[in-house]
Image 1 (spheres, rainbow over the protein chains, first blue to last red):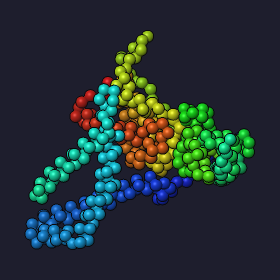
Image 2 (tube, chains in turn yellow, cyan):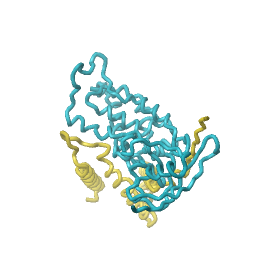
Image 3 (spheres, chains in turn purple, blue):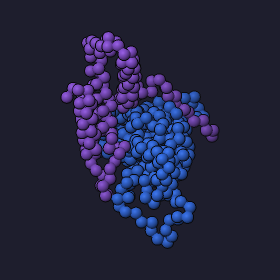
Amino acid sequence: MSRQPYIRPMSKTTWYMRHGRYKVYMLREMTSFLVGFYTFLMIFALSALAANSPDQWNAFLASQQNPFMVALHGFALLYFLFFQTFPWFKLAPKAMPIQLGEKQLPDSFIVIGHYLAWVVLSAFIFWLAGVI
Amino acid sequence: MNFRQIDLEVMRYDPEKDDKPWFQQYNVPCEHDWAILDALNYVKENIDTTLAYRWSCHMMVCGSCGMMVNGEPSLTCKTFIRDLPDKVRVEPLENFPIERDLVVVLDDVMEKLQKVQPYIIRKEGDPPPQDQEFEQSRGALAKYRQLTMCINCMCCYSACPQYGLDNNFIGPAALSLAHRYNLDSRDQGKSARLDILADHDGVWDCSFVGACSEVCPKHVDPAAAIQQMKIDGAMEWWKLKMGFPGGDA
């Protein structure tokens, strides 16, 4: 009797198509494109500032107000909410469980803590930006 | 007695005859309380004695009957026919080489389980108490108890695309076993395990797909264990950089 194990090939490019949970994972990972986009946007904004010319800075601000960019920012906000913020906050108690005596602190405490921190930090940023 | 006919599509592979696996269909009359394992046993006893698969306890303890059932890594002894459609496809666990029919080669994960040193390690000169119990509080036990539920069925490895794409990754069951000992108040082997766990093929190879925890029949939650180890590993690294002693004790 000879051993001749058979190895099933796994596609390096389409493996995630075989199950819904892998597709959701890939959608989550695709937020990296948006992170890349905002990195470039930050570089443009900084270079407009560094040029020390009010015209260039105002042109950058105007470019962000065109309907396409507004729609893109809106899309990015929703995408990050649904594929980063909500899932990661939900998973946070797994990564940082808090044990009190023999019992675990209920997951909801940790999740709510994250949302509270999010609201406080967002408010701080809006205050810093002069919005509130 | 109520019977329900199901079409059981089973992957077959005979290394001495076949170039690649193929599917064989069996028509199986199933009783209401049967699991997939019962249907396989029926095939083996009544239709085709050549069918090869692993099983032992039929009660979710031994971990040997893990297979793909309709594309989902499952323990076939706890996957009930009444919850499935009339056509059920059974394949060997994905991400493992097929030895024969539904039997996979597990040598790789067996080596990995050993590699993480899954036993209590004590520092030199600080042996465990002799001739008496090594006591532990219930709170200390609660820290790692869930991780002791693993039965090595390897469903988690089968669900893990990271392991499927690169099997150098130590993988979910072995990493959570390591974490189980790292969390044990009697253990002092955290830094001994750190080299393996914090290496490229250790916890950092995990991109938190989370599939391992979703399919785990014993609710061990390896994904959570791995994320906790990432935090632990990062803290240890900082401690080392800042000149603090490691957290073995």
